[in-house]
Length: 164
Image 1 (tube, rainbow, N blue to C red):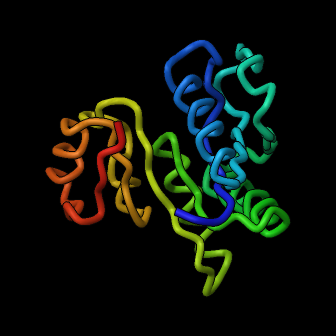
Image 2 (spheres, rainbow, N blue to C red):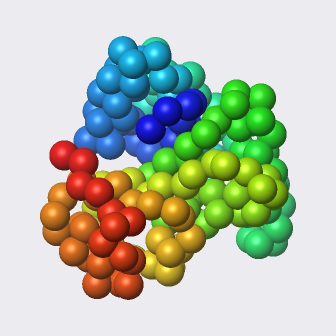
């Protein structure tokens, strides 16, 4: 994976494992001269700790639009502007709604070479809108169990890779 990377996620608490893994990924990528930024969609969780982000460039985006579909397009438009300025080549989504929004970003950037990935850190059984997983190009599974769940949902094995 070459080029700048953007992680996309709804707010996360700042106290868990996802934060630790993202911090380690940032360090690893930085050692290989790859820039990693994070955009948080500021919706839902309001009590979060940003201490873990001290060395990671990040931004929060929000919207006052009440209509959910239009709000998602609003987020995608903001992310599109961000990736154009930062020359982002890869969008890595940490949750299902981010997968959907990243697919909108890709549509808004006609003929773009941007690649989208899911990188979920939890089981995908019985999640709201599992079909949003089908909207990204590839999947970074953190375990063989998650890889099997992705395959069970019709995602081709060659679009999955296990990253432990």
